[in-house]
Image: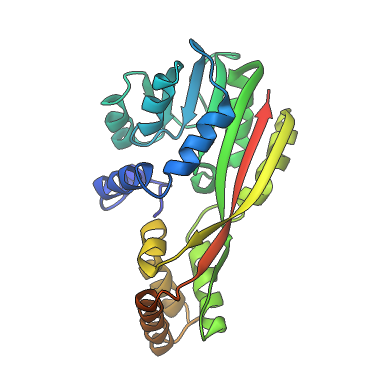
Length: 254
């Protein structure tokens, strides 16, 4: 799924449904972990950059924070306001807040979609108070591997997936961006994210479009794509599907 231009997409509602599904399913553990890492104290103002449909704003409020959301999409900002009124539609690279406005900030699966991650990180540093806390989670889609009897085809598909994402390596680069923006006390943990079924992976990334892209660009023969897809269906049915990528968790202080 691409969230680079939500309002211009063919079906913004489908993107919102994707976020709703993952908030209560595949990403629930990640979200709970980020909330714990943020160490929210009652009354603290916490910014959610790329707040999507607002699930994390609700979680922050339940933890005692005063949440504020920002999203570049009018569609997402409207949906978030149904869960939290303090939501602003704005570019994360030009946040409409004074310096030192927030005690904490969370960024989850956002930097991979933006044109200038360094500008976003610098803006977050600006709006955090001295000592303010930041937590980040980003997947590294360029690291995707899918077990197959035809590894060359899997590699071609993985490359096509990465080509469809603005920042497929962002998880490996965030710590450098944080240092350059002036953050301190940076911690980073790289962990495997595993997919046990073909359907689960397809719910996380648009593999059909990636296959089409690989075929249209001459990187993959149509019959090879069809054969690979059939193999993935078979492996899922047999409990033999295995795919993984690197997931990066970071914390930092302004």
